Image 1 (tube, rainbow, N blue to C red):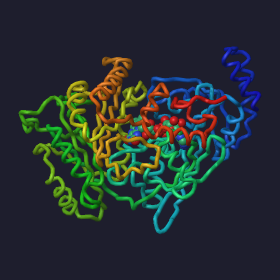
Image 2: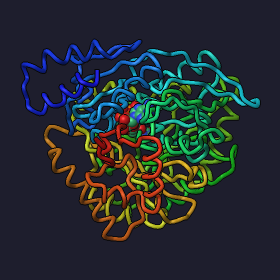
Image 3: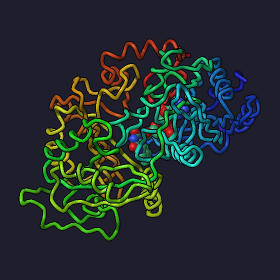
Image 4: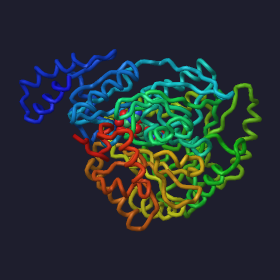
Length: 515
Ligand code: FAD
C-alpha cells in the first residue's frame, strides 16, 4: 500500500498522467476499509464555500466509522509524505479542509445518524458522529427526545467536527458559551492513528487541544453534546438604532443580565440606510409586507444604521399576553428608535433553520456558489467604537453585499484551556464582527474584496486595536505565531505529542508535513 502511495506522489510530481491513471485504481483497492476510497469523484474535495482556493487530493476516503479514519491516518503516518484532511461540509473560506495530493476524509459520508441520548448525573447529552450536520442533530433531538443543544451557529449546514475545530458562535453564545463550551467528551483519531476518548478528566490535553484546535491534533469522530429542553416557539424581534453607542450599550446590557432576565438570543448587525435589497432596509424586515417609517429616523442618522436582533423562547401553551409582557418589559429598557421594531413568531426549529431559507434563495440566484471572501474577527470592547468609525462608517459604508454582524460575547463563557484564541485585553466583553460578503456580477472583483479585507486587518493593526481573526487564515508560520501569541509554544508542544509528523489538516498551513 505505502509503495503504491509513494509511487503516486512521485508520479503526480512528474506529471506522467498516463501512468497515474493506472496506479490510482490500485491504491483505491488496497486500502482495506469498511467504507470506500474514491480516486475518481474527488473534485468536490478540492473546493470549498470560499471558492477562492482549489487543490487536487489524491483520494477521497468515505469512512464507515472511527476505525476507518484510524486506518487512513496510520497509512499516511507510515507513508513519509502523505497528509490527511478531515472534510466536514467544506464550508471553510480559505482551503482549510483541503489536502493537495493528500487524502481527504469525507466525514459527511458516514450516514451514521445514530444520535444516542445519554444521561450523566441527571444531565442529558447526545452522542453524535463528528461528520453529522448540526441541522440533523437539531431535527433528531427535537423530534426524538424533545431536547436540543443549547449553543448554535447561525447556519446549521455545518458539521459538528468542523465547528468544534473552530468555536461555533451565534446569538446563544453570550449565555452558554460557544459550541466548544457545550461538549463534555470526544472521540478523537490522533495523527498517529490512535482512537482516544477524551474529556476534562480523561486525556484532557487532547480534549482541550482539539476544541478550537483547527483540526491539528486529531479528527473528531464523536462528540457528546449537552442538551436542554427544546422550546416550541420563538418570538423573533429586530429593533433599529442610529447611534452605535446606544446600540452597543443595549446589547451589552442584555448579554450581562442573569439567565431568565434577558432574551434567549442576542445578535446585531450593521446595515446601510438605503433601499438596497441586500445591504439596506429590506435586510431588517422579517416579513415581506413589513415596512419602516423612515420619518422616525433622527436627523442625526447617517448612512450606516444598526439592528439589534433578539429572540425569546416560549411554549405553545404560554398565553400570548404573558409572552408580550416578558418581551415588552425587556424592550422597554432599550433605546432603539421609536416604532422601529419588527417582530414575528416562528417555531423554534424554523428559527434555527432561518439561514437555510437564505441559502435556498441564494442558490436560486446563483450567489451561493460564487466566491465568498469572508472576514471574521473578534474585537475587544475597548476598540469596537473606533472599529465602527474606521471600518463600518468609512471603509464599508456601502455594505458588503451580505450581512455585517457585530454583537457582544462574554469571555467568562469561553474555557481558556481550549485552543480558541480571543483578544488579549482581559475585559469580560468582546465583539464578534463577521463580514459575510456575497459577490454581485456588477460589483467589485474577488481580488478587490480580498484586498479590502487585508486593508481592514492592516488598519486594525496600525491603530493598535486588540483583535484576533476568527476562522483564521495565514500563509506563514510567523503570522500563526503572532496569532497564538503566548499560547504558540503550548500549541506546538501539543502538535508534537498528538500529530508528530504533521499529517493532519494541512490546509490550515500551520505546520509542514515532516517526511
Ligand atoms: P470544514 O470546512 O469541512 O473544515 C474546517 C476545518 O476543520 C478544516 O481544517 C478541517 O480539516 C477540520 N475538520 C473538519 N471536520 C473535522 C473533524 N471531524 N475533526 C477535526 N477536524 C475537522 N461559524 C460560526 O461560528 N458561527 C456561524 O454562525 C457560522 N455561520 C456560517 C455560515 C456559513 C454559510 C458558512 C459557510 C460558515 C459559517 N461559519 C460559522 C463558519 C463555520 O463554522 C466554519 O467554516 C466551519 O469550519 C465549517 O464547518 P465544516 O463542517 O464545513 O468544516
